[in-house]
Image (cartoon, rainbow, N blue to C red):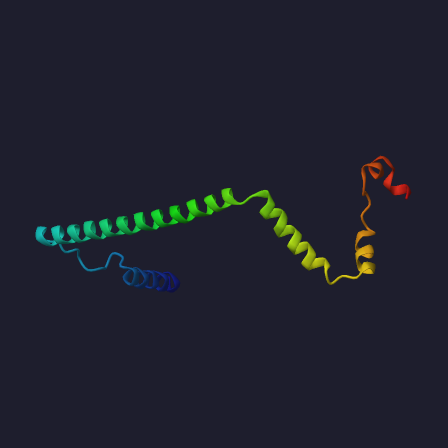
Length: 120
């Protein structure tokens, strides 16, 4: 019985903390105050909507610019990028390192595809 009383007292204090049954009575808001609050919420909603539209418009402009840049790029640009990076990567390698790196490639040409690669 003592444990049940302790449990009920702790739950009632919990209800008091979170605003349970023993919270203060609700006060009615007069119509003028309600109207002021409603107008304030509507103004906040309008400004939020305007800010949101500006963010969406700005993001769309950025996306359009990126898409235009992708369309402008050509295959030559991509090939030049690969060539520059490949040269930069392999320029500091010795011939021995290049051979060792390529030795593990099993299939090299069309003729190699016809051969059984495990019998090499």
